[in-house]
Image (cartoon, rainbow, N blue to C red; front, side):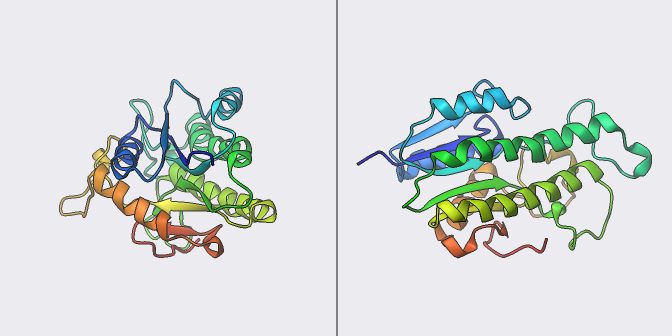
Length: 225
């Protein structure tokens, strides 16, 4: 029998690193493969393809994409339309939507056809169109909404060849990482990366094939599109 393998994309980030650590502690997989910026670049399809070819051809039962972009030293979430610019919008979509789509393109073939497997992309509640009541954050919101549609569409295709596979979008809650640090409000509920990883893995463990193509929060509750 082949080894059971978990692959974490974005292992150098707060949530990705915590997922790797928690999976290793639980020893529920024979191998936990950590992919970081040196392993692949979501803005470079060739690097994604190379990373996929380097992974085991069998036994990949869990893939989590924990890469996401909200801000850096040059770009911050837009407060209103006046802050929009094409470069920032394009980068949000490149990392949060296009990259994950290409990741699914090249990594789906690694999933077993006859056994349970999960491909989870970390999304965000602010990507929900129905739940948007505050506005702002145009690039992040819209790129995560695009990610959700890509996950939904890819899940439908995956189910045709991999009936036991599950492809979902997951909202980890507000986590104490560099991504969310500047935007945490006083008194707001916030999780450590370790606690967020535990929540996410619990949700993943409880997923069934009929859950594929859906959007869940850290409690396992469905989030409206």
